[in-house]
Length: 364
View 1 (cartoon, rainbow, N blue to C red):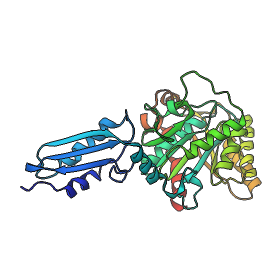
View 2 (view 1 turned 90 degrees about the vertical axis):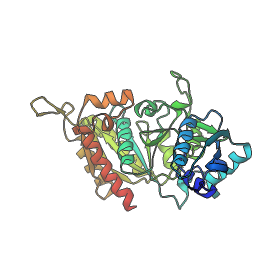
View 3 (view 1 turned 90 degrees about the horizontal axis):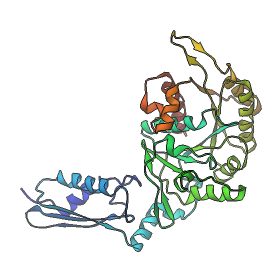
View 4 (view 1 turned 180 degrees about the vertical axis):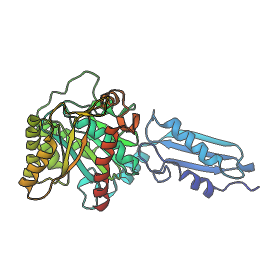
């Protein structure tokens, strides 16, 4: 049996995907050398993006698995190294292309659908919706990112169960991946328990860096978890990402619906299209199967109706998500309900909303 050639080894390595950059290691310049010796001996050197790369063992394992499948393979040696400054600079150029250190989302050629999840007040389940929608959309085969723009009250790292820190490659940050979703949050950069005490200009600059310094790659959908209300951050997002669209979140309660309508009204003022309204905590299913509407009824539909009148075109009620203790539990342990209990009514409601958003992404 003949030994594998350098070309066949390289072809096998092209199927190894970097877990963070989500591209073949051959495209990223991570394959420093491939040598084939006598009796099928293969020596490969892989250059990791940074020293102490948290994905080093996985990459090495994937490299060995890919090459081990080749016919005629003899002794396999894989050497793991680290990129030089010149190699990292070349990689950054490959990733950013001609865009440079600017927001790729504002490139006219960008196909990323940017969806900001907004609410008028806190405690209505906006972050739970963001986390569950992200996983549902990723399960459909879409490339999904989540930007935690709730700087003061960040929660995405815990809710999505992010275990790794972002990798810093010179002036570029690589977001960790959880449940198939790229995630970035200021909570990954500050010690536990430390509050963020910033004024508006600092918030704006930070959000700008989240768009430019974080390498998101070619996303189909970027979900943005906004803070509640109509303050600095939603305004900055509208300015930094003018193509962003908005989903308004409320509960059935009249008071919450009135406040949620203000978040929608802000989107109208900033000329952001409103994709629809989601009503959380719609009811609690009793042991006998009846529904107990703890927070009243009709709030979501009323917000959708009022925004339709203000906009002059229909704004849909995308879904109603029932109360379920598993939503809270999933958010606490990093296993959102669409993962932990995928067949329950709440998970099905999240998937229904994701289905509608995905169909609009496909049509865009």
